Image (cartoon, rainbow, N blue to C red; front, side, top):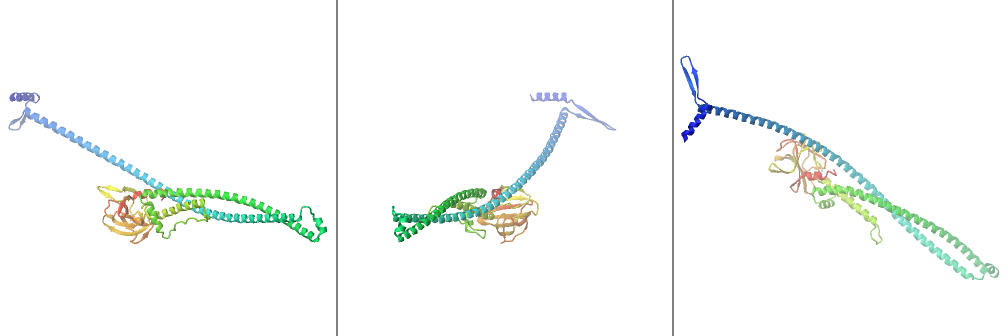
Length: 439
C-alpha cells in the first residue's frame, strides 16, 4: 500500500517536474548534473517560500512605516489641539481676571455708596430727633395757651355774673362812683382778655398748620429713609453673596474663621457697633432694627475681607502660564499640589498674608519657600530658581517672593504649588476657583 502511494507521488512529480540533466563541459572532459523531480520540487518550494517571506516582510515594513507616519501626524495634531486648548484656557483666565477686577471695583464702589448712605441715614436720624423735640415743645406751648384761654374765659363769665342781669353801666355810674370804677376796670379787663383770646386762637391755628407741615415732612423723611434702607440692604446683600459663596466653596468652617477674626483684630478696624436709640420703655424702632441688621451684614463683610487677605485665594503666577499637572495620583504616587509652567525666572507671588517659615533647599523640592498663614494653613512654592524672602519675614498677598525655575527633582521649568491644612495637602484649585468671582 505504501509503495503504491510512493509510486503515484513519483509519477505526479515526474509529470510536473521531469528529470533534467545539466551538462558541464571543460577543455578535457564533459560532465552532467542530474536534477531529479524531488530535488526540483524542493528547489521550487524553497523559492516560493523565499519570495513569500520577502513579500510578507516587505508588507510589514511598509505597514510599520505608514503607522509611524500616522502616529507622528496624530501626535502633531494632538499637540496642536493641546496648544489651542492652552491658549483658550489662558484667554479664559485673563477674562476671569478682568471680571474679578471689575467685581472688586464694583465691590469697592458699593462700599463707598454704603458709607455715604450710612452718613445720610445718621444725619436724617439726627434731624428726626430734633423734629420730635420741636413737636414736643410746640405741643407743650399749645397746651399751656389753651389752659390760659380757658382761665380767661372763666374770669369773664364770673365778672359778667357779678354785674347782674338787669343792671347797666350808666346806672352804676350815676348811683355809685366806686361801682362805676369797678365796672370800667372789668370792662377793660374783658377787652384785654378778648384780645389775648384772639391772639391765642390765631397762634393755635398757626401751630396746628406748623404741626401738620412737620407731620408731612416726617412722613416724607420716613419714606426717604425706607428707600435708603432698601438700597443699603440690596447693596450689602449683593456684595455679601459672592463672599459667602467663596468661603463655602473653599470647604473651610466659615463661622469658626469669622469668630477667630473677631477675636484677633490687629489694627484693621473693629466690629461695627449697633445703633442705640431711646425707646422710652417701648419696643425697638423698626428703623433701628433695619439699621442694625445692615450693620451686622457690613461687619460680616469686613470680617470676610480680613479673612480673605489671610487665606490663599489668589494665583501664585500673574504672567501667562499653563497647567502641566493637577492635584491627585500621578505615576503611581500622590501629587500633593498643582504645577504651573512658564518661562524661566517668571515672578512668583505670595497668595495670602503670612510669615515665611522656610526659605532654602529641601531634597526633591529643590529651592522651597514655606509660608505660614492664619487658621492653620500653609503654602509651599517649590523648584524655584531664586528665593527673594527670608525666614521670619512677614509677607502680604501679591508680594514677590521668588522666581520660577527647575531645581530639585523636576523635568522642566515650572512651579509646584501646595496648600496644606495642619500638614494635610489640599487641592489648591479649590481655593483659586472659589475666588474667581471676587479677586
